[in-house]
Amino acid sequence: MSTAREWIDALGLQPLPGESGWWAPLSTSEATVEVGERRLPAYSAIHYLLDAARPVNVWHRLEPDDTHVLVAGGPVEYVILPEGRPARREVLGRDVAAGQKTTVTAPAGAWKGLRLLDPDGFALMTTVVTPGWTEDRVRIGLPPGEAARWAGTAPWLTEALIERLGRA
Image (cartoon, rainbow, N blue to C red):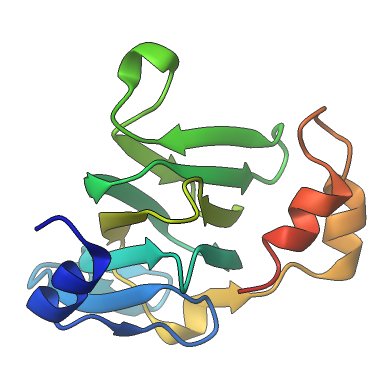
């Protein structure tokens, strides 16, 4: 398949509320792990797609680790703001010689925002969350205080980029 629409139709992707992009569940582990007082699936996985209509996955923070693997298209810019560590900018893509990566992991508790670098392109990813995703362990929308705290901490981390990753 060579277009976003073909992937959306073939995988039954739907708009992802809040974060933006397109998604569909893929699988959830039957094995469980203990997190605090809860038993959660060891992992959950989805198909996730950005395209010209939905080119940004807005700032969000997950309690678990979140790993994205490129399936088709790309590249996608990731801005990751891990607590207590410097901001990271990584590019999920196929040009490994240019520093792109085929897999990007945002560590548990980090803020992250993604954007499609080719405005006319698309990127299909498989995303695996460990332990599994639950609605109560995600926060959408970078708080204003966090935006101000991170702006300028790296030469590329401008107020304009932070703002762009804040709107779908």
